[in-house]
Image 1 (cartoon, helix red, strand yellow):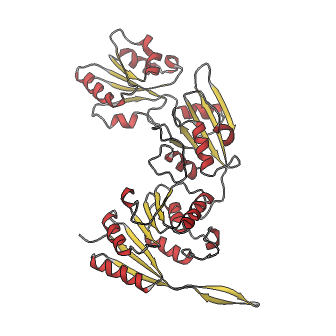
Image 2 (cartoon, one colour):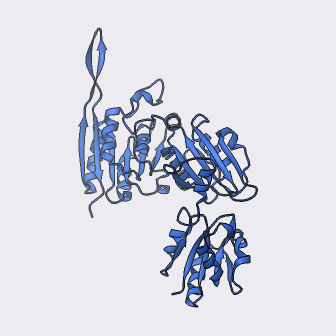
Length: 425
């Protein structure tokens, strides 16, 4: 059977390949790779070998491969390091049915960690080798090229990143500063041009230093974050949030917040909407409950929106995007949700319920908090009209307060928590 082999190669070229890899390349009649890697092996290929430069033409690789195999010509494809570690391996194997032999090399992760004398078994691997999405900004959505890297760093104390020409270590450092990290929190170690005569290592850089440096390419970066006790996923005290002043107390209280989040049943990868975000208490705790998901929030009051953004920065919540405006503005640009919380409707409650139940993903939930009988009546009437499944919990909580040398219980306002599920077919 005609062979197709995916060969891992590093910048030391032919000398760094195994005997088996050298044999496959020498015998191959069609060899594909980036221009830089092809130049490393050209002198050692057979006289009949035809080379295809993949730069800018990656999508053509399956077509070239299938055509060569159909003609009975053996194929070797070059990839950097270990092709199954953020490389071509899985993508290529899914593109055609022919048997694919994979001959990995030492990964750049292993090489960089060896240079920095850093064990790597507990390191999270991620990549920002993607399209240029510009500098990171507060409220960036999952479409941003640095989003996977920022989420990995938020969730893991050690992250190894494959970089790209646009998304460089310097840009990454600036992104971390924008996200609220400081040099006491994070250090970067950058390995440049591994296995080449001009290899350079930059160990234990501060974010401020790395942010203004120019690093030789190609490079990879190890991000090490100081482990911290961290903030609980939910259940923060009300006073831990920056709130409207002097009217403090206009926030979803801890008791109602905890029950509402429980009713939302947020999965780790959920897309969550927070309508009427206020100070952000529900949406920000939802973001912690969905570390691999994202929260899309909207708030019409400029002061409350500013507080929500300040709270997001304070707790370093990067999977949270807050939009200024009054729903349903912006909602048509958001992805369909798994869970929706309405804390304020701006007089559009009935229309919002109709819109949301039409957008919820299968199994999704809508949770609403009300303190007035009128809004409760509007919600239940609309849900009944739409033949939605719903239930209501009245939450009446009391908190202890000191009185002389004793304590009494002070009642909070009752809250109705309405939970609705997608409309029946």
